[in-house]
Image 1 (cartoon, rainbow, N blue to C red):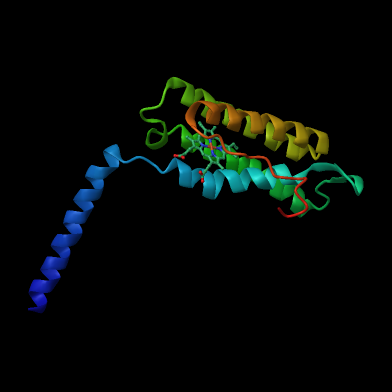
Image 2: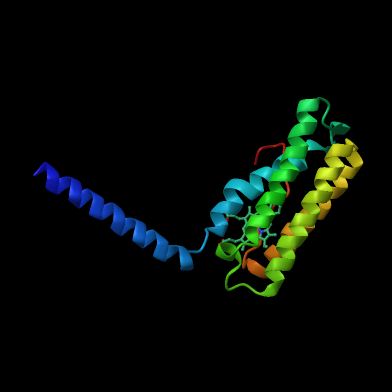
Length: 161
Ligand code: HEC
């Protein structure tokens, strides 16, 4: 009896492995989850690193001050580039137009620019690169989203509504 169960379990494992191998050919990645769980939070880290805020409390700026803060900003840009490369893979790119690859490549390049800016530790450059990145996200969304999402951190929503 024990013998039988082991064999049955082994057979199940083999069957499920075969199932996976077959699925892999057509399986599509969950773009939405990738965006929500990885792309957006990482971009947010970058965008929030440098902020020029002007409101009723006056004008002030937020910039990275410690090595750790700068490194986190560099790291966010590097991660964004990796995520952009991932978007070019067939599980994301299949059945899309060639412009998908262009948008993904645009994000690769914007991320490289963002990384260089963070490495230079020049807040203005980080702000500018963040803007370029934002435009790349939006360009792809304009084509591929029916209801484009709001991406930028809401810097002025301090009333919490
Ligand atoms: C190559 C195209 C492309 C690029 C570049 C891109 N996105 Fe997206 N994004 C999509 C698509 C497609 C969806 C819609 C997925 C769905 O709803 O099925 C999406 C959805 C989203 C969503 C909504 C997720 C949800 O929960 O509904 C967010 C947030 C997002 N993207 C953030 C970003 C940010 C930030 C960037 C830039 C750093 C970016 N995206 C770059 C294609 C792209």
